[in-house]
Image 1: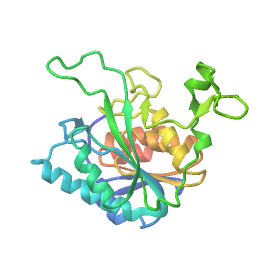
Image 2: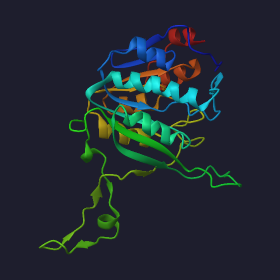
Image 3: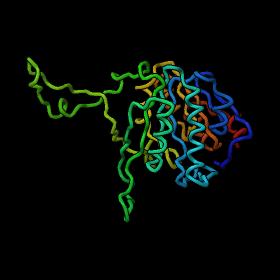
Image 4: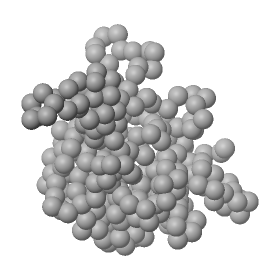
Length: 273
């Protein structure tokens, strides 16, 4: 696919159920998405660590300018959330502390999640290489938000594996075999030749997105991803009967997204060529 950047103003594809915008994330958020219309937002922005996305390499002249840009899209995302809405934000380990401060000035942070994964095989030799990325789970109203605990239960080691008995109770009872995940998520990264693999430098796994979407939205809710990349958010939302809005500036990734959610056509391919 030939790399192509976004048009001067966002172009919209798709249906009312699954909308795709080819355009800049920040300006499209500001100009095309209604305030208080989104139930769940997942944000996986450029990390400002020099990765190349399609025709562009992420680069800000200073850390201050990068964080200023982050404040802009965070403010827009907060505006788009419904009063009961939730937002998950990823960032680099280098930006973890300042992003934490920016978020908690605007939202309530319920959890600071560690997405832990295995090494790529080539690891740092002069320091301890990074094997995790932060995910912030935030809500507008700490007293009223969606969290479907029963939909994301995982195996409990004490009950399902070790089969321990809780003798503190009046009648000794086996520990539960299921539990809500903690804030360390051991989920493998997407690898070359895996069925879900797309050619993208920071693709997120469907299993990670499914946990987020099932936990913090309900069927029929609207899920927004303003930096859609390979459109994993939209694909998982579609599989789980949620609606989606995706924004992506790189034309080659918009093609991937339209294919993954079944909206690709000769007309869209010609427009994106």
